[in-house]
Image (tube, helix red, strand yellow):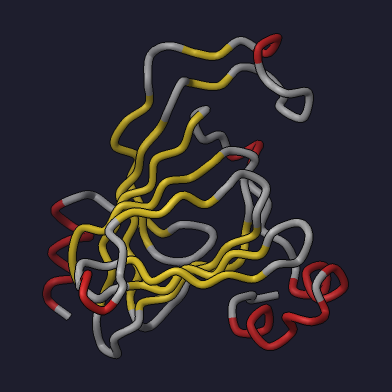
Length: 167
């Protein structure tokens, strides 16, 4: 699709380990010191980071989690469905888009330490969004689990876990 190629080229997007494409667009100069962060963090973190993120109907964002809250912002294309599983095993679904009469929302916050995955809803389409993380994102905080790990933890969600994991 021409629009997907245009977005990848225009915004210099590269493949993301969870699926889709991304480019970091902001990383604050200021940092939070290790002493001011919870114990599970190693080292300092920037105050905030932000990325462009592109999904297509040919792929998905696999279940993963980070320690921080992550704010999703809808820009263009198909709405996307975001699946979130809390550490207690509660599954929720959130449609991020701009058709407010259909209940879509333009922004959603995934709480830190929640597992989440996403897909483009419309066939043969794309979802162009942004993600903001605070304290700032660091790959040290990123967990991309194997399917088996999530199935053992949340067997009641086997169908959705199998749909949004690759290993």
